Length: 571
Image (cartoon, rainbow, N blue to C red; front, side, top):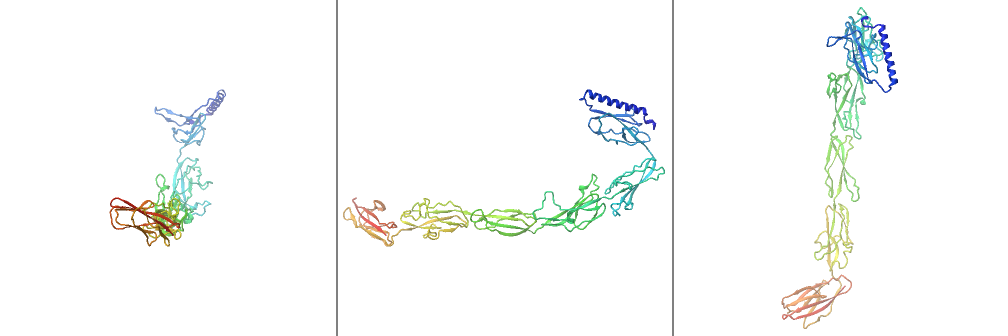
């Protein structure tokens, strides 16, 4: 042993060197505070051990450079010493235990020497027994060797009076090894090796517990809807089982609103290590089954099937006659598959229209799909009801909803009452009708003047009645002749407002005038018959109206003769 331990003199020299270095370093700091040493040297001393380099030189030490403030791994040991095993490194040359293991992370702020720590090799056998805890034990809190079963016995070797080096086996499903005399049930207490080989180290391993959890099976992006609930066995709480214990899968107790429980899914691949040794099962449990609890937690995910008779309601809303309100809906209960999107085709209602709508059937049965029907709108157009004159009629720009009440207008676009005298000469306005050929009014100002809008545009036509003088008189003033021998007579017709005029015969042409204007006709051919024409007056006024009717005739020689008569009409 003396061959590789230095003398006290060497230690003194080393200490003196360190002190001097520190002193000089402090002095340098006094004179140059800004100078900082950035790298340091770690010297690895073989402490009796050596190695041979490529040039066959026997090397007793080597170095490694460290940067200030940077941690790095120590260079792996290159030395060997016959009859000894390398334990690690120490700053104490005489150490029997290592401060730093081979390749440890290291950081330094000064130059330092690390010495190899050696331990003598030996050949004294000793026994290490490894005991696994049983599934059934007498107590969880108190250690009892009876609760353990021998798993492996191994023989190791060491030197007498040195400590054993028993190590944990690292069994799946068990804790780290420990010895019964250790207060820590994860530590192995090493013992001194007896020269007679009788040393035995008992290492115990507690059986670990893992959990079984029944989960809802919902994906990360799947959420429960309003009123939807899920019930799981054990209320979803995890149940603990010891490694290797028999576990029976529960198939009852799982329920979800709107769905039927189908089976459990188990996938152990997420627990597999690099070798896959823990990947024991991936699949479904559709019947009652048992399995041994593996060395990891197990989660069973519920698999659900959507119910096909989940209730949802379709509400058909019709638009009100006025405003933005809707009438009480027609509610139609329906059934479908949970989660399914359904498309509702609108009903056919006269005077209404709607577009198709869709909705997703909620598991809770709370889905309501509303279909809104807007009323069709139409227009009312007024026409004068005659081709004989252009008469101003009401203008209505309103769009009427189907079913709305329409009040007819009796004032034209010039804000003049349709019944005003003279609006249509010779006629009286009676009212409106839906037909252009109507002779009687359907809607009158003093009678029915409203109607309900149907599902179509409406056209209304004015209805007129020719005026008459019922109960009135027509008075004739005797004819006045401007020329000789002209016969002119007039008689009132039975209808009270038509008058017939008769002229003498034998003239080539006849031209009739009323108040100086040609209002009847002119005949240009000779005709020996008497000429008879009728003329109709507007007798609607209560005041007397007097008209002058003049006849001009021309004989065959081109001579003109005339005569006139005054006609007075009164009611």
